[in-house]
Image (cartoon, rainbow, N blue to C red):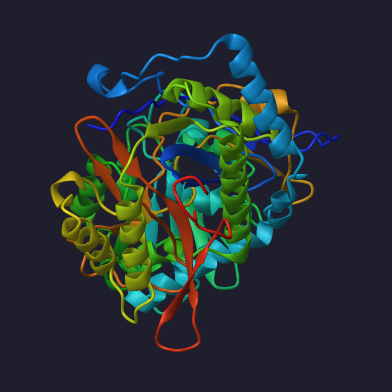
Length: 501
């Protein structure tokens, strides 16, 4: 097994300037990770769509098993370690942190565009609506996370967002203005040019839902239900789906991949035709990153790699993996970044892993490349070197917003804004923390074709009894101008060798 050290942290990245008061928080995050040298450093980041990376995660220090987490004791004294730390921080700060310039606040139009693209995917698939509950999809579309709705745990009363094409599929007409189940008109419905959004919410929670300050050009509307009503039947019979009462059509819906099973089953039981998201056109919408999202990813990836290079220049014999992890954390913090956990590995066989990553990148550039073909290319390279059985995980995965606590959306200016660093460090109570999202690059995923604007990790690894090695880069697929695709490393440059990250 590889020796690993993992730890959980709160983190922040923010420019030091006065900012307006925030009316609410927003969960919009981007993750990136790197292992770049034979002294392999892997900071995994939760990134907000702002000039900040921060987080608060319920991960304990040394979360791996005792056998996995043991590290060799340090052979350097505190004074030497402090000197190494000062060296790394100085090298990092001397760059001027120019990579932050590629990130920018997220405007209202970005959210509108997301819902529009979902509506287009629904129309293309011939589906009436996407239905999600608070989670990553909900926050990506409407700026509200699960913890912001219920801070302790998801409750049994459904709070659902319903996104439809402006013209519904089954009725070929625009959805009616949304009314509560008591037939009292609410605020004007959130009808955008190409999409329509409504919310199903308990009646006694409707006022709180309206205060969420979600990013819509007009105040959104709600279908409400009383405690003794069936919420799913209430939704089916509401004006969200007028064609049900008009001509008896069965609404076809896609449910989010985080939807709890009892909600999906209840929707099906009352008369909805329920379809999963995996493999759907809707799932692909979030796989394809926008220019603003790529700018954020590029900033944090570049900042990560530069920090690793700064640390590398200052390392001396005698350091333990834990020493290096501490130096890396402090260096990242000096530039405003802090990982929510690190993996630091001292190891060999770097060349084998580098060749495997080369092979996966070559496969990624091929026309009609699939998630499976990319994994198999790396796997074959490692197997030829005699380490096939030691490559125990997939070669990579998509990355994006999963796995971090909130940033902020300012209602008055319709954009995300920064706040005092202390707010960023406050415990968000977030219980969901995964850096992984589609496409998943494993040998069984033969149906997922790689497309332009997808962003993913390529992270082959070999794990032996005494050590392990993994080298990782975050890459974006861009159009190469012909049948083949072009791959861009978001940090700008891959490692040149085990001692040249």
